[in-house]
Length: 521
Ligand SMILES: Cc1cc2nc3c(=O)[nH]c(=O)nc-3n(C[C@H](O)[C@H](O)[C@H](O)COP(=O)(O)OP(=O)(O)OC[C@H]3O[C@@H](n4cnc5c(N)ncnc54)[C@H](O)[C@@H]3O)c2cc1C
Ligand SMILES: NC(=O)c1ccc[n+]([C@@H]2O[C@H](COP(=O)([O-])OP(=O)(O)OC[C@H]3O[C@@H](n4cnc5c(N)ncnc54)[C@H](OP(=O)(O)O)[C@@H]3O)[C@@H](O)[C@H]2O)c1
Image 1 (cartoon, rainbow, N blue to C red):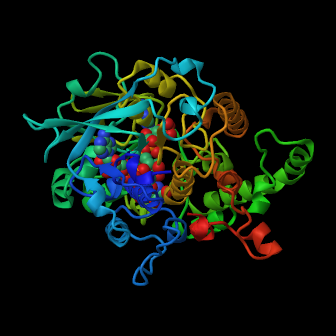
Image 2 (spheres, rainbow, N blue to C red):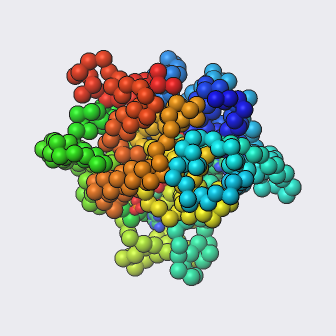
């Protein structure tokens, strides 16, 4: 294969784009990376002051590039993460491949063949990464500020696209409100957590200073922002955290235990897609152990923290929280701030705006607020969909709830892969595995199965995950409790040994992490 003649475009220079670039470079390609911002790092380059890693760093590191010795913390802060990413980009000579301030506004598949895409049995017509008749055309908006009055557009034609645009930025999820009950009637300021995170620390501190702040949500952005505001404003201007669903939030020291539990023995307790009778039986017999583990963590958290007192006991199992990729680590001093009156918690199914604050369902008086921060997440599917100019591909993204094949390939969208879309408790680790797999595929080391086989596979995964996760099922979540099983499949595809430990007991009971796959590239 003449790798250097095939053009690969990578969209985004967060961790996913950096790894996609590194692994395609290693296979002899000359990828070009388009990054809308002026620097690398994606979410780590623009975040609130108190942000730190919530994955123990051993599970959030590149397999062949360790954290520097000076970083002793288990959970490095966002500046340390960004420095680590810079060091990686420098070490593997990635920076010269990146075009900064270059936002890809749309991608269009152009083909010189009259063949109907629907009639293909094989991905892209051949099951190969590249096709002699199909190319992607990218429209790229250049400029320091992509929304400036006269940005310039350039068109690039490439053989393969790797989308690494990230899930948690750019397109915020703003709740809908009935007419005259939305932010337009509110006299104060409403902003999304994304806008708050984009502010310089001193500007953000000035904004909230001595203001009555209400934060909406109960996942990581919400609890972090609420804790940050409460720490800064104290009990004289308490912050309110208003949420629909209580989630299990775990203290930092408990998390390594959970990660150590993600081993092959635990995976025996989980049902797998298309499993045979013996595997099914084993999972049935062992699954009570998982239930005991989940209950023990729940009891511990209820014992340690005043969850009942503050109406914060989740109605779902801890295990369900993990298996649906919803990890939230408790910010430092969270309960102290509640105790000293700097932070109030309020649970309500809905809210709307009024002139001087929020109308909270079930309460007669408005919740007086000067600032409302919507930490309500992102519309990641829509962001992905909007990238395609073809309505056919837009439908492929939007009209199916099945996961992608190997979490990065859509069976109907040729010559394109998506990295970083798949969520997990350690996204760097799970994305690096897929970056390596993809690089092997691009290098021609294996072919994809037929489209119908890939579709069957993803449907099996959906069925299997829905059974465990029920209403919390999200197509984007890499099965947290089956990470090693998923990695085994990737190893098998690229033709390498999936057993990575050197003796039986370690294979069964030790956790798997990025370092175990160091030589997979
Ligand atoms: C505050 C925060 C903390 C987190 N902490 C953890 C953690 O502890 N553990 C964990 O596993 N995960 C964590 N995550 C999840 C995190 O999103 C991933 O770990 C990871 O950093 C995602 O990297 P990415 O490259 O896929 O996406 P991003 O970091 O979002 O990077 C995407 C890049 O693509 C660029 N881009 C987007 N669209 C375009 C376009 N059209 N044209 C050109 N460029 C474009 C963006 O500018 C950005 O630089 C955290 C997320 C957030 C928001
Ligand atoms: N390492 C870090 O320090 C850090 C910091 C921030 C973010 N992150 C990561 O970044 C990702 C995004 O986190 P996020 O917290 O921004 O988003 P998120 O995980 O999608 O959470 C969104 C929150 O908004 C709530 N919500 C959504 N719509 C709502 C509505 N209409 N009314 C009321 N509440 C609504 C949700 O409530 P329900 O649950 O009830 O739906 C949920 O609590 C996650 O992976 C997270 O772990 C990490």
